Length: 262
Ligand code: PEP
Ligand code: MN
Image (tube, rainbow, N blue to C red; front, top):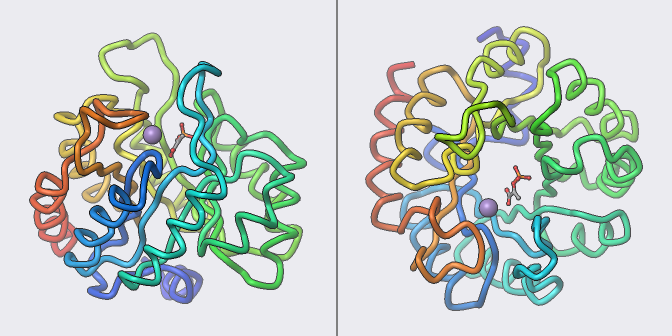
């Protein structure tokens, strides 16, 4: 990694242990008890960030849609109690200011990667705070389209953007999405921005998550996103792919060993 890349990244990413940045947490924030249990595990591991969905982009309108502002309040309280930074998705331009007022990082989901007015609004709302924007690649988006869309955020004055590969829609049905692991070295060549790999959504099932995570760290991802739930079978969204805190602990130790080598 060149000095310039290290310079470009240092202010906004990194962990207390400086080994690997992991955005872990439940798919959806479901209750204070659920969120705090995951927060305690993440904090014990010496990690910096917790993720959680407040507004959920569900395929089916009858599915759980997220707790909205109540979830944001739980996230803020949990972040303060356990000393963690919080990350959540903004689905709608009208929620930009509200979400920005509660959390440390704003996520743009795959379904919104070319929602240019949302991207501009997120850029505007974070212009002064420089809060991190985690920008997911759309599941049918090329890298060129993704990088072009990134400029809609950065042009508004916030270049604290982390790109996040989360798998593509292909003919393959054995996994939920096909993880484009080569996006990591390609982004490293084409952009100074850090690249995260979400290993939960492409896997779709929890037993594939550790392999994808190991591959992502080995290929040089700057950070990893992993969904963790205290009781995955009871989760209100994405139960099959979420790790238990115990499984997550084992995986983090392994990823730290891999990160130390690569
Ligand atoms: C998520 O991270 O909660 C999510 C919905 O992911 P994606 O936008 O990648 O589907
Ligand atoms: Mn999810």
